[in-house]
Image 1 (cartoon, helix red, strand yellow):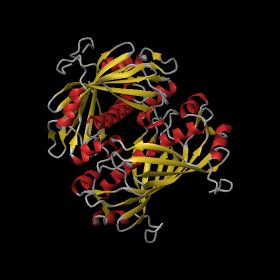
Image 2 (cartoon, each protein chain N blue to C red):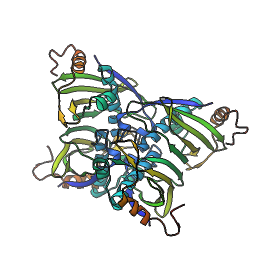
Image 3 (cartoon, rainbow over the protein chains, first blue to last red):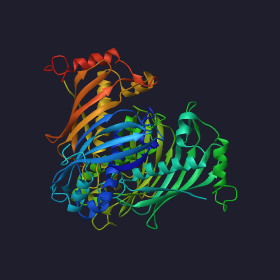
Length: 142
Length: 142
Length: 142
Length: 142
């Protein structure tokens, strides 16, 4: 089951060619991940500031299929592919006007910000992530 | 009559001290101005790409009164103070949790992107801007 | 005596009109302030992470006089105008190709990041700031 | 033969955890690619504004191996792996303090900005890219 976050392409996102400058897609992706975690059970503010948990990205593979322009509405769909003890592989797809603009996979790690080391996902988040695994993935292995 | 645009403080906005890095407030301000123009009668995409009109900022004075943190909801209110032939002075106020975080004034200029020169506001926009002038400003002069 | 920091206008800085998107000027300004503090006696890393001192901007007034384009070299000159116990008014000027592109004044405050309150400048920084006051400013009052 | 571009980690690059927010690494990567093209024979300004040629990224795979902090100096090394008629696969490595912080591969495409379609590399750039192919890559195929 995927989570969908909507972004509008802003003036701040586009480059001299009038299309989204690709690092801005990753700012949008991060905003989508933030809202995803709120739905998974813990928002980024509580996670970072109260629980002292971060979720750094350790791997990110992206195919840019079509440009996006100022004013485009982009639906960013996120779906977990594999939920480990302290990591999560997920797939992302940016769709606008019925066309996939970019897609890829990322790996997030659950990190103790004070110890600066990986730590297990909080049980509530792990449970929500596993519940969101697509049903055609037997055990969450992509 | 002020226009209000809402932004969430994102991970992308905050600095090492956990508060909004001030250039990010201006990215938010620009997003607010974009949505304001759509309401005034012409969205930024049509304005820039079809009409070849830009609205550069030529003056911006800001007081930062209180920090904003990850997860804060900010209401950005915009109100015109003076509408000239090819310029507009406006006031902005960022409020979050009932507290003003920053406020200031800016001056936008209507620019012909091809001629790279100031030009009069399109009549529809000028009319909308004038209609939004606060009633206590007799003739739009702040 | 002014401090000068040089920046190249990057693809990341420009907008759909091919000129610098104004919030990016403030990212450049902040980089200039960072390098200035290193010269004043304490770099931003040591200041923030070791001394737990931040230098938030509480006021910023800017006039944008001419646009800057991809590839332009900009010299950002900083000069203190008034050095208070825990604040510093300074003037900034962005010059490129012999032409002033933007200029303005800002006010920095010295903040204790843990107490989240203003604190006096460290003596070494206060001394360097005062030594950099222009000689035509009798007592540092602009 | 790799091209190396140096960046300082700025306040604008780091997040609430005090480490580089990963989209900022891609802004740095783009700055490195800009300077690389200048050395290859055509700077980004001339390429985009005079030749009307863009170099969008169509694929980007990254492994984030170690964080980078405020004040770190990062050497970004770029080396072509395969030079096609209108594309270029390249490898990037960010090293700081003797440690690789991130590495990956990207694919750039040579695009006619007006026709909005792929076009062959200008011969001078193609020649420079081929000359920079590592000698252990027989024909430029990674």
